[in-house]
Image (tube, rainbow, N blue to C red; front, side):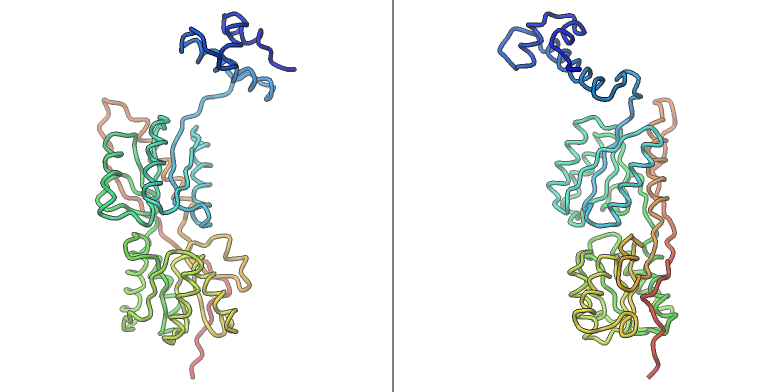
Length: 343
């Protein structure tokens, strides 16, 4: 059944001609308040008709904004999905913006979410954020809704921060390769300015030191957390004699797999590989990939828990101090690591 002009007019308490002028965007002396009311009723009546339910009966949800650098990365895609699921269970809908690593795009997205009066913001900073371009984020923090940083820290931005213990993750990944007899272990990691990359590399270095293995700068390749960085890193590290590679994420590990296949190398017979993030990609590879699991589901749950606690505060409550929440990674074993053969 089609919604008619007279139906909208009756609901709005105006004449059908007034509704017609507004819906057709014709020049008139109708006040903006009346126009907005007519348009709102028209939208609601169409919604009621199509859904077969009363719009007023649908519970109004709170709204959170989330900025994600790359939904093409399976880790961020899963994490964003879990955030949305956990938020909905607590009565919130999440509006997500994917910005890539363009800082200007990132700030435009933040501004757009704030102007839409979101209750709070969940932010994964782009990898290009640095000391010079972080000032605007501080301004948003001072004048906007509550912000929680997820996965990646931002230089001198002090707010709630939820992440995995990336240093520990880098360490256990490297120790796992050492336990299989590897001493010439390559590391493919993200750019030095990225929080997660720095921490994972620190863990790699700690594991080498604890095992009495000298650090070799030639066995570390800085990339962009993408497939091509894994392929390029594999080429350089194998040329240095690496028998095993710790990849900073599963996408880079996949790049290592591609390089090995292109050059007739077998994983794990010729090269052992461990990934990071434990994404669905691990089980799709020809040889299932051993990977570090970050506990992303628990991270997502904690983000929503922290924000709901902050949003529940009243003016008379004592302000909650900002806190850092770290989750302990673990290794999910599959088939990509093998004991090094002693020559």
